[in-house]
Image (cartoon, rainbow over all chains, first blue to last red; front, side, top):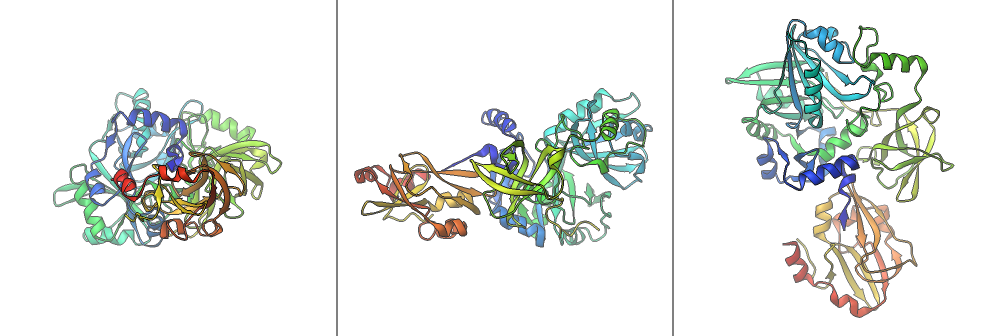
Length: 388
Length: 125
């Protein structure tokens, strides 16, 4: 028995090779919560340069806990960037696809950082903490690219800081997740969906954001790196099931949420990724806007679609070939998983526009066996509790 | 970790139960615990000849696909339809209902070169 590690978690094969070459030489990054993971019996794996829990007991159990009760994920590997200055709103609006001006203090939004070709450098959530202060939560694997890209375009009167090493982060997710926050901080009111609250608790500065990556209600919680282990234990004591990256991936994919590196890349635009809702072409100029406007005017030639097996079959995984029923190769899976909630194979693939209509039949090639699937609407899983 | 003493083992975590010239093959309790949550089993075609070390079946968890290797050389005579229908049997009963395939062994003496329970136990520590 041997695991095809490159296929686990939907990690890009090429990335995985790079990751493993580097990681086997013990250059792994470690989150502040690692000692607690090991104490809790986590199975730890290298992921995107980090040593992370993939699961504690079972991906299926952890997945179900988040859908039915609540679970907690270590997201300390994610990055926090701070932008401050009187002109911050205007500058960020030129750097990001969504309209920052729509945010009141305390609000957040999903947005994209694009290159000049309209390709996705990163997808992130930006929170407005004050008129001139913003808190950006970015993908672990892109912290440096994001920071350098922003720094390269940074005006003199804007302050930009990478606080990623200072924070421990936990995503507390599930229909009853919010009750754990209320139990730990009875004096605080959790912000509404996409909102942020920075508060002080017994002298410690904490940040809570009402968001997540599972489709369920819940929040992301940030503390100082040093107090992170105690907070993780506190949430677990409050009933949160410790969850690893395995269920994080299956939960996000059931919602059709993209994973940068799999479903997003610098060669693909947010319109092709189906993220047009987070692109405001009318707010004024921003990097990549011209390409997106032209793409919108000319029509897309390819698009990211959701694919779902018609029957039970071998779990679909990233890079499996997608074919027409006649056997013509039309693409490959960007992500794929056996959906624990639906108990059938689901995945996403960039396909030529002619094959993207809902209901279009395709075959997914798994070790030369063909499994029939059709183009379906996302999310795949439609009963998530969502935020308030 | 359960390692029955009446079985033989190989280093890639398959077990073998020899009855006459028919070997039943599955994966060990240790292997299923490492995999967790088996959600799919791909059985070999009956009649296929396999050599020692050939990838012969596939067991998949949510996170990874794992090859099951032929622990000896021979011909596949049966796949277990029950694990195809209910892959979790590999987790719940790895040495019983969770068997994966049966093969007619080419050289019965070759089974002796596999590890016994003590040897396998020592290997997995």
